[in-house]
Structure formats: structure tokens, C-alpha cells
Length: 141
Image (cartoon, rainbow, N blue to C red; front, top):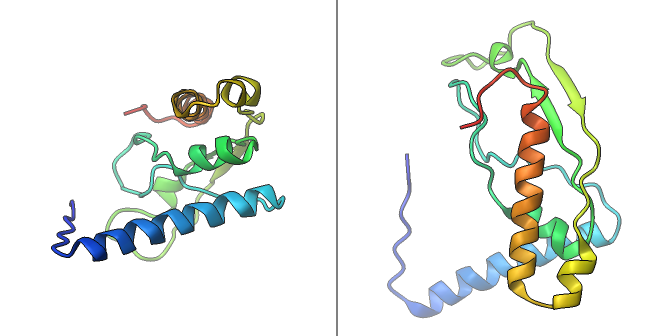
């Protein structure tokens, strides 16, 4: 189900954009301050099997802060919380931590271009997805 935001007042749109940029800056500051951040990059959980496309926020923050992504695979969660239920079921869930994936800061900072940052966050996203997929028995969608 998709939602549509209709903004008729341009100043309201500017306020929404400003708020989003402030929140993004807060995440980057937290990472720069050494805080560990946890993201669920699919942005949702469904009963249907498969690794969904990843949202880019975590990867954008990692590139901006120059911090690594540590892929965490969760296998068995669909059996834990089945469709149409609100209570978890006893089952085995396997959590696998993969090796950190570091942003290539030398290449992105040397060029100083947003294009380099974009390519780097896409690389981080793709490598993270591959690392997670190795440890779960689900298709990559």
C-alpha cells in the first residue's frame, strides 16, 4: 500500500524538506560521535519470503560519516512471527554478523563529487545485501 503526500503550500513543503535534512544530519552526527546505529534497510517486514530492496538511508549515513556497515542476517524470523498473528511463536532464529564493509573514503573525498558518494553508497548497499543473502534461505527480490 502506497501513500501520497499532497502539499499545496510551498512553505509547508520547505518545512518538510528542512525537517528531513535535520533528521539526516542528526543520524550522521550520532555515527561521527561513535554511537552504534541499527537500521532495518528493507524498511518493512512481510510474511512473504524474500529479501526486499534496501532503502538507502543507512548507506548514505555510512558514507557521510565514514563508518562501516556491519551486515546482520536474521534467519527464521518469518516462522517466529507468522502472518496474521501478533504473538511470537517459539522457534529458532539465527543471527549472523558478517565482516564490516567500509566505505572507500579516499575515492569519494578526493573527487569531492556527489556522484562519487552516490556510487559508494550503492556499492555499500549491494555488498550488504549480498552478505545478508549468504546467511538466509530466502531469494533476493
